[in-house]
Length: 176
Image (cartoon, rainbow, N blue to C red; front, top):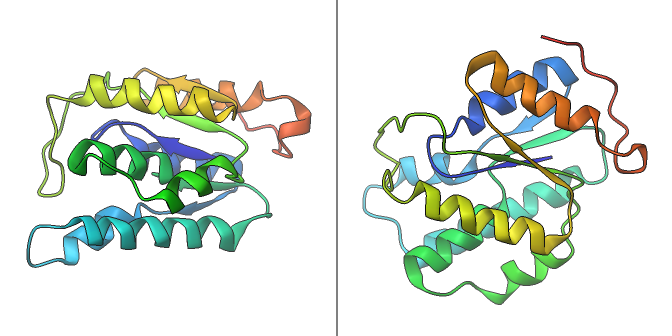
C-alpha cells in the first residue's frame, strides 16, 4: 500500500497507525531521511538518488505480506516535475509496472505543520490534484483519506476492508 499525499497530510502517522492494526511493516519516507542529512540544498541528482532508493525498497519487499510505503514513487515523480520541470524516464517506466496493490491518498485537510524539510504550504491542493491524476492514470485502486485523528485512520481501514479479495490478502483489521 502506497500512502501518498502533499506535505503535512499525516502520511507517516497514518502508516504507523495502520501498521499496528494490520500487523504490517512500514517502509519510512526515504526522501525526508536523505534530505535531513544534507548540508546544502538538495538537487535534481539528489532526487534521482531518492527515486532509485524508493524503487529498491519496493523491489526488496515484493511480493510479501502487507507493507505500507510512507511516501512512494508517485510523489517523487510529481516532485521532479514540480521542482525541475521534468522526470527521469526510469521513474515513469517503473510506475507503469509498479507492484503496488492500493494507494491511500491523504487529503490536505489537516493544518500545515512547518518543519525544516517541508517547502510548500501553499501548493498542497495543486499537488493533491496531481497525485490524484497519476493514481487514476495508474489503474491501481485507491481511496482518498480524510478526517482527523482516529477518524482518518478509520477512513483508511474502511477503504482497505473494501478492497476486492483478489487485490488483497489482508486480514480484516479491528475497528478502532
